[in-house]
Image (cartoon, rainbow, N blue to C red):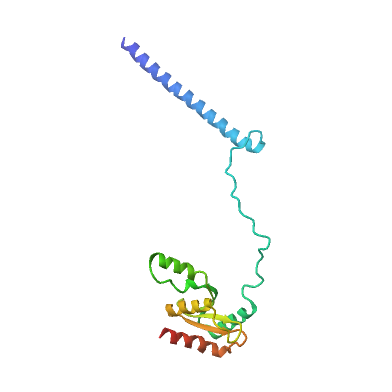
Length: 193
């Protein structure tokens, strides 16, 4: 009698293992079939492709968007070379945002408004020492004795408040190479003192 019980138990166990393996093999075969359908569909294009996210639309550049012939105009290039020759131990940067060298005063909303206002202006050149401390800012003038505009006065006031010397150079009457160092560093020392 106990042989019969043992025989039923072993037979039931074998039946369960056989059923589990049969179902696992069926799942594996179905998975393999889906895999082949997906990858064969792409090569034969007989089965519709899976939906793909739409490409992001990139606006086309306007037809008038052309590269500039020169980064610096001829007068600016001449002043840049003059600055490099007269101040070889300094770094010269062109077209620098005023907000990069002067921080808006105040707090909260007032400071944000002033920072937005300052960010609209650019300086022609900024001179830095080897530690990247701003020594002076350069603004180019095109006409001798021209009255300062509101924009120029605003830049001058921001730089003065930041303790940065502003040097105006007339492109029609450039200083000599040996005089540029004294012109810029001399004014920077008086502005920093």
